[in-house]
Length: 355
Ligand SMILES: C[S@@+](CC[C@H](N)C(=O)[O-])C[C@H]1O[C@@H](n2cnc3c(N)ncnc32)[C@H](O)[C@@H]1O
Image 1 (cartoon, helix red, strand yellow):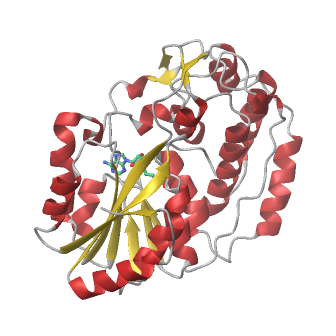
Image 2 (cartoon, protein in one colour):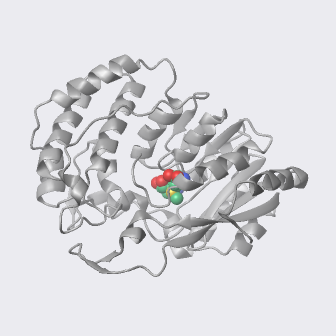
């Protein structure tokens, strides 16, 4: 699975437990990112609708949330072997991300170029194509030379970047096959009539996901965009901005979404490093539902663990703290059900904090 700022990797068991303790059969993961939460929910037997604006999240969703037993994994294995044998080529990816910038070693960039072009030439179903793209993206992620964000690469090659790019079969997630969309969550909110619960994990500060993961966006779209700056960001990073990343607009976007969402149950994640105060979120959710909140001790994103770097990628300091508090709000029509759900979570141990 790719490195992703704000990923709920370590919280998936808790979020899954919380949602499965509510009387729900279906969930919309409205800001799905890596789709990790959706994978946990699908494995727990729920129908999952996975949504995000990012094209790379859409292919992750098709591979992990939508793909079912009808996917011929023997054929995928053969296709991966075929792709592994392709002669490396110096194309857009190598030129942009290995020569003009240094996110990957050229030998790996040339493999990415050749494999990505071949995926485009093969006769594939929508799901097969997504599974191969996910395999390639995850392979590239394992040999990148970043701190987990694509705003910058490290000056001295990361040790993992010397490893050869290796395609692996994406895991099969068992559970009911779900559905994937790529639309603005604020537009989706009012259309979830067939879903019992929404899981809401929006961007919580100024960091734009579109810019932070511009390489994955270009790798999946394969549209060879014009680029700018040292990080060779897609030209449309300049114009693709989410209201959730702008301090002045973030509250209206979030409040508008919460007021529109039609699902009876709602689970909302927020970091204490985000723009909004816990009390403000509670009061917003209380307009239409009963609310409970728990907090968890959370390891900060990989870049924070690695330290502070100057633009040349040299380590120049440590971040002030390596952990933060992650808030989880449960909201719905019945307070007793919410209390019972919370009581069940107490058994999950020391990571829960008093709020
Ligand atoms: C905090 S991350 C979600 C992380 C995810 N829960 C995980 O575990 O990987 C927020 C996500 O919101 C997406 N996003 C930003 N604005 C959006 C919008 N208006 N509608 C839908 N998705 C949006 C970003 O692409 C990003 O993947």
